[in-house]
Length: 112
Length: 107
Image (cartoon, rainbow over all chains, first blue to last red; front, side, top):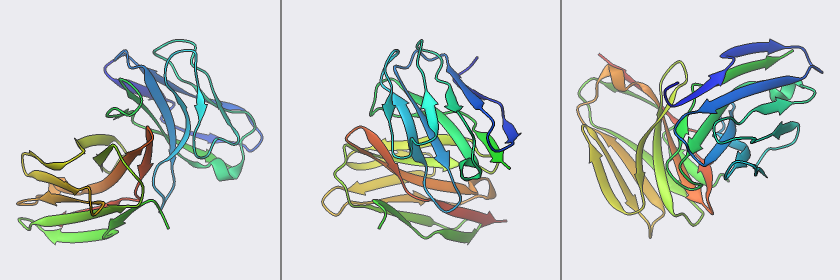
C-alpha cells in the first residue's frame, strides 16, 4: 500500500441495504476523515477521527457511522442507505488534525 | 452564503494564457489550502499557506489575511492543467471547502 486507499471504487446499492466503505492508510497518520462530494457543493465532512480509538461528527453525520479500531483503518458504514446518500465519498488523512490532508481516490456510490 | 467562495465557477483558457482563480472566505482560519482534482476524481494538495506567497513550478498561491482572500495563478497554462481547483480553509481544525473552479485549457 502506498498512501491512502479506498474500496470499493464504485458501488450501486439498493435503498435500505447496509454498506461499508473501506479506507486504509500506511502513513501512520493520526487523523482521518470522511467527506462526501456532491455536484455544485464543496466537500463536506461526515465524520473524523483525531487518533485511534476516537471519532467525532462532522457537518453531515446523519445516516453514517465510523469506527477507528487502529491507526490504519477508518471504515464508513451506511446502516440503511437512502438515495440522498448517492455521492462520491473521499477518505483523507493527516499527521494530526489541522495538518495538510492526503486524499484517497474516492468511492462513487449510487443508491437506487 | 458559503463560508468559502470561489470565482469563477468555470474558466476556459487557451494554452499559454495566465490563469487566476480567486477564493474568499468569511471565517477565521489557521491555514488555506489549494487542491487539484483531475477528471477521474483524485484530489491532490497543491499548497498550504497561512501568509504571503508560495510558488511551485508554474503555480503561484497568494493569501491576504486582512482581506480574507487568496488567489491561485497558473503561468503559461497547458492542457494538462485542466482540472477542478478547490480552495479550502482550516477553521478550528475543520476544513471548509469551496465548490471548486473547473478549468479547461484548450490547445
